[in-house]
Length: 215
Image (cartoon, rainbow, N blue to C red; front, side, top):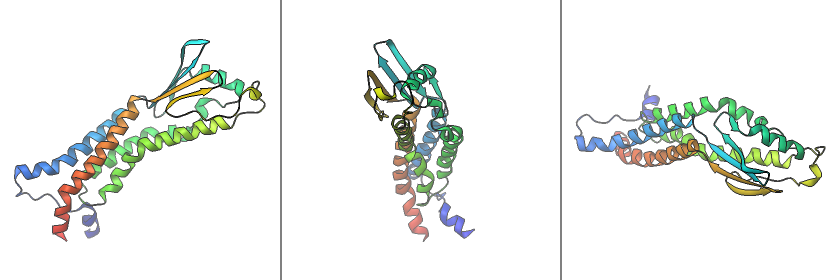
């Protein structure tokens, strides 16, 4: 039981003034908002890409949610077939299968951080801080994997060299231009990450003196 108390840390003294207690509410509010934003992000696009070419005046669009792809996936897969690229839905199958539960778990970890008043709170908050960057890194990995592992037997395999589309910004693939940008869900995850960092600052400011006094 004492080990659990060492992790959870001291409680806020009841005899504090209302003004002093405000300091302890700040990390609670920040962590709470971060958790809510993560849950909302599940239902919103995390990444969007437009493929531009003369034969597609309106462009072709892909929208990536945490657990699925929508948009002109079939049309782009048809184009990719000729250069030997695998179908887009074959990418990140494991990540897509666990993403909703994983984001929900991050939200619960952030809420749990509200009740931990020691340095161990970092372990609960760190996954939320890193999540947007890990998402982009994983997405860039799959773009690299698909763009550099083209089927040499494809009809137009000799017309294009292996390539690595950029996860953000614009790029060129033969006569096609790609424009990739974060979706609303990813922006919310980034805001949650920033709020978590700020929450850790105020958490330390509020609780470290209590922890030091209890030792």
